[in-house]
Length: 443
Figure 1 (cartoon, rainbow, N blue to C red):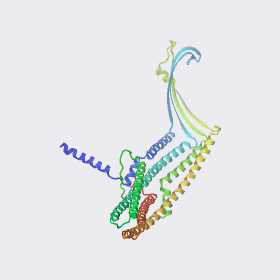
Figure 2 (tube, helix red, strand yellow; figure 1 turned 30 degrees about the vertical axis):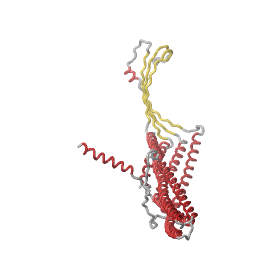
Figure 3 (tube, rainbow, N blue to C red; figure 1 turned 30 degrees about the horizontal axis):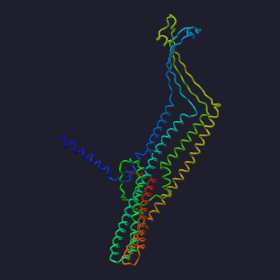
Figure 4 (spheres, rainbow, N blue to C red; figure 1 turned 180 degrees about the vertical axis):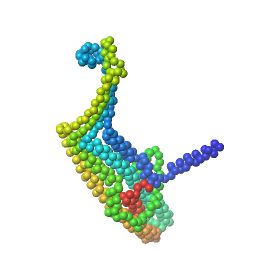
């Protein structure tokens, strides 16, 4: 029975281990990066601060209540509380009081402070989405760099293997007297160059993997394996919104633009708060107090603590009007500072909207451009393959020299690399266009 009970647990752990060792897809890499991003975590703490600001601003609308207890033991010359005459004695006294106050009007500063805090909380949510999107975009670019250089390594390895095989085959032909030593030396040089190209692409792949690990905040002592098989094909016939439609939607819904709008709105409210300090303020208050006294140097029988606590009670109610006249130009400078901050926020809002429009226009242009480049690169690869096969056949017949064969092979490799780059760039820009259209980056 014990073995039967432990079997599902062992299977669960085995499945978990298999899931952990499986290559990570693009969405899994982005999701991991967002969950472990220091920028996202800092924004989460910042949002908690925004929530505390709302709580503080809301609490400021309610009365403030204080309770005080004091006690004193006086030695030497003092005032007798009963006769109000100076005497030299030792006395003991303590007092108790409760007081409260509430602002009635202060130029709507408390209400505006609450409004600004609530806008800040909304802005924090948009900033959190923006931080997540920025992390996802960084990981996406690093991920596709890994995919690109991984495929470049495969293509370089194929060319290096073909060059090596061709060189070894011609070495045997040289032994039979069918090839010259110069041709064989040229083929050996080409094989060495292709090996160098392979090592260079492997180094680029490793550097791209390091960049991806850094973007994901992946632990340094753990291996990372990603799925480099991108199964998304180029679809030039896919319908996409126009530039105006996409721009209009992004300006209203993109987190970066929404955060900028809220920042501008908050700066306007803070400007109203600063101006409100010029107006008079009204507040009301009230309190209750009582006390106990005893002369420690006299045999006089004083009323008990209970009686004094009851008899010494006093109450008060107050209303105050404060009119600002001069405070060292504090109010004036605060208004000017808030107005400048509002104007800065307006300019930043305009710049954010212009930058977003330019990014969208550039993205749509790159989608179309890379799509066309991919189609043309495919035709170029087909032509380069035919040219390479023809050149290789001519070389076998001794009609061309090894330099022409090497040139043809390099043109084929370059064409394949250009097609791969165009395909991956099209996928990236298509995903960016979908993001501006409201689709999440992590799907």
